[in-house]
Length: 608
Image (cartoon, rainbow, N blue to C red; front, side, top):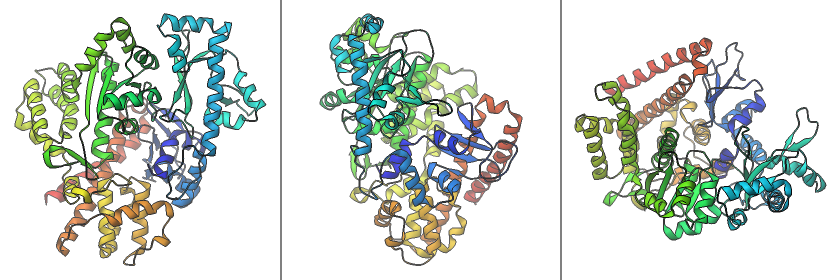
């Protein structure tokens, strides 16, 4: 992972922007405010935490990621924005060299977390005040060995226990950074974040304690809280139990992913050492990337209720996006998939739990039934079809269409044509539609442009890009290989590039016109991506083919940009708070009409 990616993953865009935009307020799943870049009376500036992006639907009509925001707000170039955000993330840039996660700053934070974990653990084992917690663990069937192996603890119901320890050692700053301490409103001191909670230390693959999960034992809410994001902790990147499970996962060549801390603890206690937890978040591409290094076989153990089904769908979506977008997936001989010239054949299955039971309950009742459930886990397409089909009204065409649209994007990503045809036949039979209709719809979903690029990068010549958007990369490669095209670059808006790195490279190439590219003149942080693009194989083309490729590329970039805007509009329209606010609706609808017209123009041009 590049330094840029590490910084992006460690900084939450909502927290960052809220420091610059104090009036940023939650609006459904997203956030909104008056745009900080132009004067307005109606909020048109939105932040999308799920996508870690922002966009102004007002006169700015621009957006981007954390780097784009800092560049615009601080009026600095990309290099300075990178350094500002690196400082915020808590590590020193090495300009191309891999960052050492055990550097001095990170090691201090690991040590702070370890000190806190030691205190919580001893308090659980020895304090009379922790007797109810020990009784709770006994009632839940947690053994003394499991308490020790997972280093469970209890935080005293006090405001200053950890604070006093850290004050005595001069480590208040580090305590605030890890989230063990919270600063009082107005800056009048500090207090403990965790008070009266059962503590679950969260370790990374190296065994460092990066953060904590914490559970209340009464009826107060929230039931669970976690350490906030820090330079060493990102909940959406971590997997609970991975430090104890990674050896068994590699040995068994399989990982079972559950949702809760207790599920992992009981699974390991009963001998199922290949179980980890996503800690209540949907399985995402960063967690998948960690697990992929250990195994190719994934099993999601999910509840059978609606919440479990939704979690499974989100997990499938992340897995699909990882295969389809984060890595450049193309068909290879034998129907296998290849990344950078290397074959891979990950298998993802779903194991629904008996209705109303969590994995830890299933295991304690009968460990053999747990193994049977895992062994009989369904291939993900079968599971997805099986949970969608019962929702269909056989007499309602829209109901059928809605169900098919939920499933088809996933099925279209299956690379093996025989396997894909099998599931299309199954879906057609169960929905009651013609198979040819589904095949036609699937073909429309395929990105012809990405496919064509893939065919020109087969075999060992294909390398994984630093930034994983094939369309953007191909456009930049054209501008690098054929400098005369740079004179036509006014057809491309910088906002067409969703990745700040690619956007900055485009602006650099546009400025350079027909001149030679010199690595000495470019921001060091951009060199890794430029090096990849420079060394990418470009098939020989005639002048006519080059011009056609460029026109095609511009059209796809513009269409991609507009589709992204339409998706953001859809996210906002799905939030009741936005729908209820007529002024917000008016702003978004006005932009939406413009985007619809622009998309229609693209389709008409393509037909012509």
